[in-house]
Image (tube, rainbow, N blue to C red; front, side, top):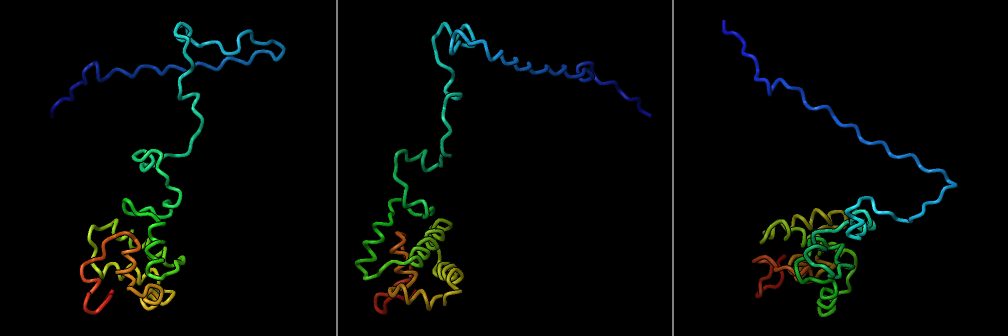
Length: 181
């Protein structure tokens, strides 16, 4: 039977004891006033004449998104509800397109736009069937595609994609027949 080997001395050493954190100094008596309002904590800071680090002075701010970092100063007030919107798309442009088509946009139009933009976020060129199924599932309680054809007479997919700022999929429009989707 083989004998057990002892571990090297370095492996048998115990870890160094933990250093206790320094206790906070007790507050001074209320009657005594400090002679200096803001004395630097170290001699190096006093020699430099610098202020405390910015991380300690910075006021709490709202959490930044990647869009804010990539596009500083960009106005995102109305686009926040359209998180999957393509670059360059604005709700104002959609309102102009709808006015040209004779549509008065209601909340369901905006929901169609959100659904279509979400489908295009997931796939570069989604199939008509995928778009149709997504719209059908979202608006099933209101009548599905029949309701969507009522609010978007140019076709919920063809006209909806135009309003959403994305390219309609191939076959969504048949120029000899009209909108088929």
